[in-house]
Image (cartoon, rainbow, N blue to C red; front, side, top):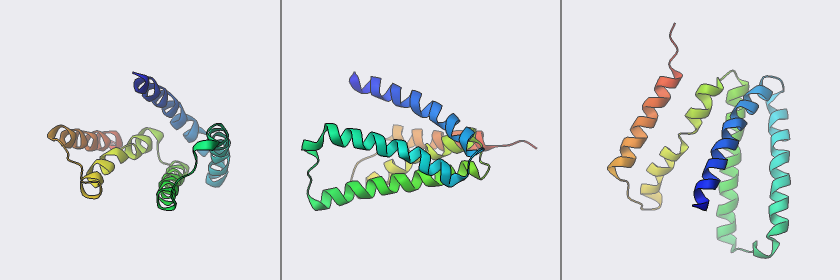
Length: 139
């Protein structure tokens, strides 16, 4: 059940993170938020690299894919900050961007040749409906 502890900690940290990110996005330029937030990422990355320095070797193709994954994640984070800094409400933007697992599930069918169950399809449909309800603004 170690995975559950990690998942719940992730939920806690990301839940608070969204509020803090929106707060600072209203008070700093988007690039200041991006640079300062990523300074923390660099610090944590250096700590992990130091602790596990003996296990960082990888073949060039796998290392390139790992770098690409990081690049995609960083680009997504940049667009998240831009969305919040452009006036997006955290209560809409954060849940909307949290739909990325639905895209991952669909892409995994074609790229990784994974199957998708009816329950997963239902979950994706319900998640999309939830985002539509969250982003609805009555006039």
